[in-house]
Length: 227
Image (cartoon, rainbow, N blue to C red; front, side, top):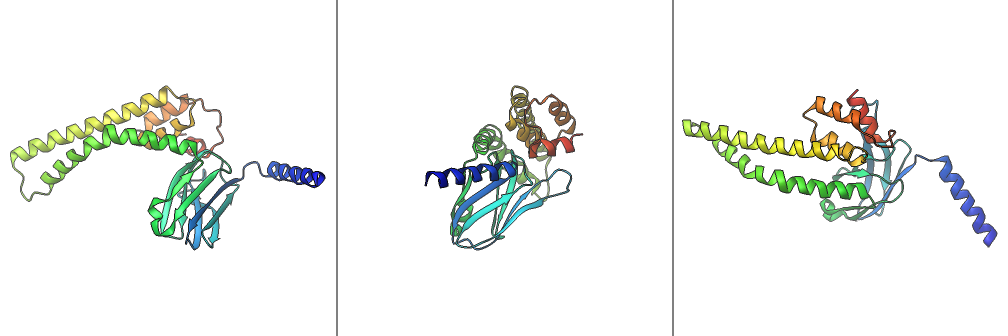
């Protein structure tokens, strides 16, 4: 028995060595049936590419791809009913779970970088998005009027300036976070998402990045975009 166990272990190690870039995304979504697609932005290809596909029965998800190098962002289309978007930073620990009848409440576990990013996005929402919400409502209220008074026009200008100020604060905060974390993969996602309106700034910061893994999906996508 020990000999058999040793042989199996050797086979597993050999199999793993033959597929060093293989990424697995698994899960259990109760009552899910149909085609599940794993999609990502692939360097050199426009738009979104399907990098794995599976016909799911009994809710068992087992997506495998050799076309993705971690970390990076993926989209999982669940039989056309819902699309999950998250960062993958592990080759075989990503796990999706939940129920098809509560498909918007699915959980994705095993991805540490995604959790850090969600926490950071929560901070952005609290500091910048929440204050902008009442400003947007005030802007919409004035814009929806059939006839605007001079006071309306004056207040509209004030509200727009207030909104721009929060957006500028947000961009500056993201820039600072990136500058003090140049070696962190999370900074690549901040660079892509938070500074997308400033291509020159993206290019400038990207040149200073010192992340070790320059073959990752997120790095290669940014490198192609910002060359």
